[in-house]
Amino acid sequence: MNTDFDCYQALGVAWSKRSYEIVLLDSDRVRSLYSTEGPNARQRCKQERIQEHLEQLIEGLGVESAKAQGLRSPITSLMHLRTSDCRVYLYVERHAALGLLKVGPKRLFVANVDSPLIEINPLCVLDFYVHESRQRCGIGLALFEGMLSGEEVQPSSIAYDRPSPKLLSFLRKHYGLHKYTPQANNFVVFSEYFSGARQRAENSSRKTRSIDAFSTPPRTRGLIAPSGLSTDTATDVGLKSAATEDESACSSQNENSGELNQQQVEGGPSTKTNRSHTVTTTTGARSSVDASLARFERQHQREMMLLQKSLSESQKKLDSLHVSNRSANRASSYALRRPF
Image (cartoon, rainbow, N blue to C red; front, side, top):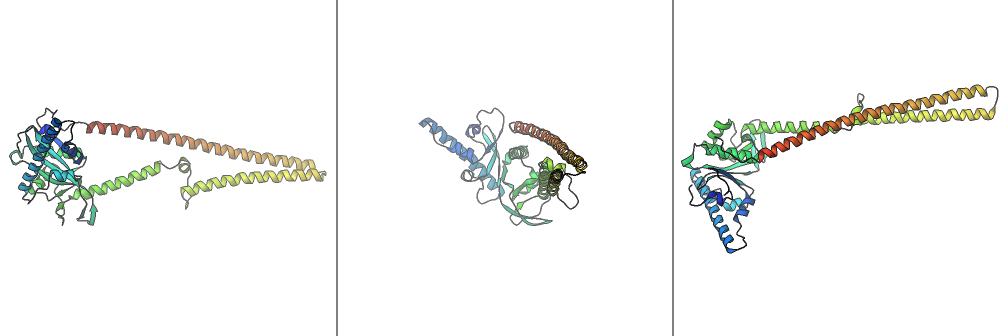
């Protein structure tokens, strides 16, 4: 569709010097371009002209798309775009609008060969049109690739609303998608969507298990649970046994000291012998307490080493995540280019 105005200026990309542009229009972008507020009459007049040009672009492509698909009324309009969460990708040249791709989320009930009727909420291709005079020139592929890059999705994870035979052959040729189960709502959801959903669910559960294992406290990881007991139960049993040993040592020390006092009061020929025996017993109790304290100190050192190791591993994971996020942000900042 040729125009007598500058499409780049109407869409807010007048700075571009390339032969074509793929422009994303959502509700926020349309509202900003559709605004007629200005500091003076000249600015308001300019905004009104941009509004008229934008209406000609969207409405013209929507009407031509409906005519090509044999629909009674267009499904893409400027008013619908302003009041919905749909997004439109336009393939425009300086004085021509040649392609349109409309996407948006939908709540669908679909069935697969090996699964019952389920509810999904995928991204859907709702309208896809390339001008008849420029078909089979790579415009459709550039537009579709631009949408995949902007939405960060795979072709197999998208639902397609009433796809034409041309769109089905396009997906079969470029992405190898051809297996699907006919649905009552006329949406096409390829079989790869369900296998990909299962794989994503397995990856998510595996990631959750790894996070739970990594977040286990070092004390719990350092203890080995006996048969029939969980790790938490083993931890409680170990602490209780240590406390019981300390109590028994203290009670034996108190009993020995009581016997010593009683023998000192009663006196007799065996007082020195009993006193030496009591001193020996008290020394043994103290040595057992010292051994318990040394054992707990060694255990504490092992736990601190494990904690330091886990902290270093978590720091490495955080560093790798920061690097991947920076690379992803750098890749998303690149402008869309002609793929051929």
